[in-house]
Length: 188
Image (cartoon, rainbow, N blue to C red):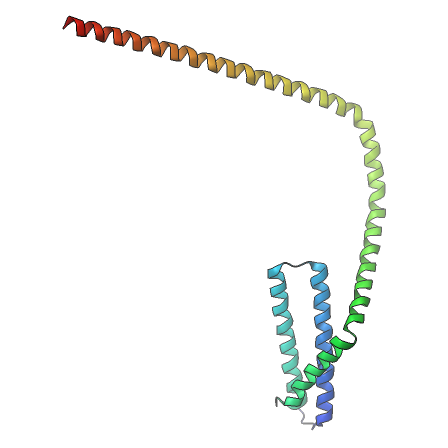
């Protein structure tokens, strides 16, 4: 590692530019978050990744320009650069990026639409050709539903009758058993 004495003005200028660059990276992350529509966890993870990258970048820059000496004016340069970026050009940069991304999305959707139109046309023609089969299928399905409903009705009736017969037999048995008990009681 070569030792080159950097002037304080140079260190301040570099730290201001680094603050502008970190503000620009934050705007790119905001753009990704807007189009990605992250939920709470995604935003949390994205924020953590941004701060890891910015801390790594900031410490590496401090190591490079001041050989690890953290000076107050370097930290103020970072803050000043970020403030200059956010109060100055951030709004315009975001507008340009949103315009570019929206244009790219529109172009991609037009390409996809132009590729799917022939397939939709062919599917429409196939539907027209298969319409008589669809009608036959619907009639067949309706008949099956009616049969199924009728069978369900009949089975309910049969089971209800079986229950009634079973209950009738039970009642007869109870009557017989009570009559026999009464006979036994009378005999005694």
